[in-house]
Length: 331
Image 1: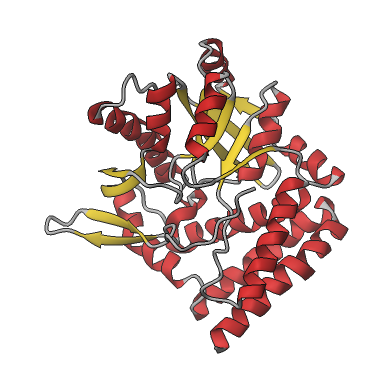
Image 2: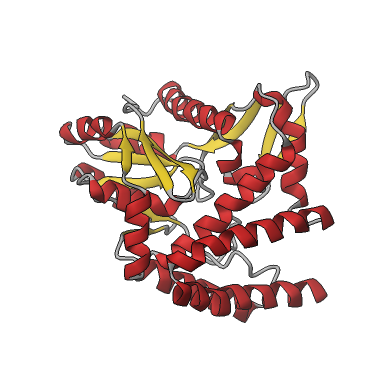
């Protein structure tokens, strides 16, 4: 009961006190504030906060091929999450949108997206739990591309906080989404696949997570000196519609400079198991490259539970997956 009270109080403070404060401060003051909150959260890790993240970093970092310092990577990880949290609050405001447009003007590889659009079969813009998401949409708009955004909204805190708190937080998130002036596709089991397929056949660009939790089918593929399960939805959509999969990574060079990097299209020619697995392996390989280069930008350090097999290789098990009974917002 004590943990439930503490989490509920923290959620109410974040979404109903901290949110309004961030908007009042605006980017000029709110962004420097994230440096302070990052430092405070990082100090709290020495007293047990973010214990799972720190344990996973200590276990996996030595296998990434560079002598990463656990403390430095963990501090960078916290900074990315703090910045994402503040920017998503600021984005619907005029000041916030101008600020994000200013810090995310660099788009590398836009010719790959242009080539995929010219084929006329739609584009699946594959993103991942990596980097600061909020900079993607304004950066693409600046070079002439508007997209649909598919994502999941659910009462994720319902089992750990009071039900009314989880519902209030979800409602707050939905209002924030809908005030950001984006074309949204909320996940709805059994219906979303057909809707996205229709948009792709109309040559639209749909942004989807390549490592999302909203999936019914997944396969285990090589990843970070081991294996991990990834959803096959992107590959199956590409096979059914002929759409290209273009991987996108937002790279944070500093608080005031973000780059959007686009990669050459990946195609899935048919719905055979070999084609599906080949496509998934292709975009997971790109994700792995970025995690090795920028481990602090990968959000999933909290979601994974690394286990070693008999040969010493890792098998990454996701500890946060969508449960059948989870209440999902259906738009």
